[in-house]
Image (cartoon, rainbow, N blue to C red):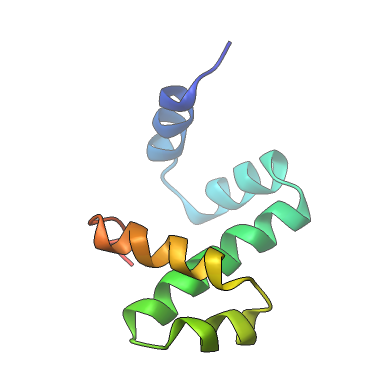
Length: 81
């Protein structure tokens, strides 16, 4: 049975954009891929200083979802974004 560490190892071993695309397309549904992209957009907008309520409205998500992204940034995550 796989665990989170296995997933991280597999992702970090992938060395090409095409291989990563194929892996993610096989692993995730279209809706799940959209959700990942939306969460990344939230982080990018927060890091640019956009207000949380404006992000929520623009992306059609709840303010709580945006607040979660903000808290993760405050915890030191997403330094590479």
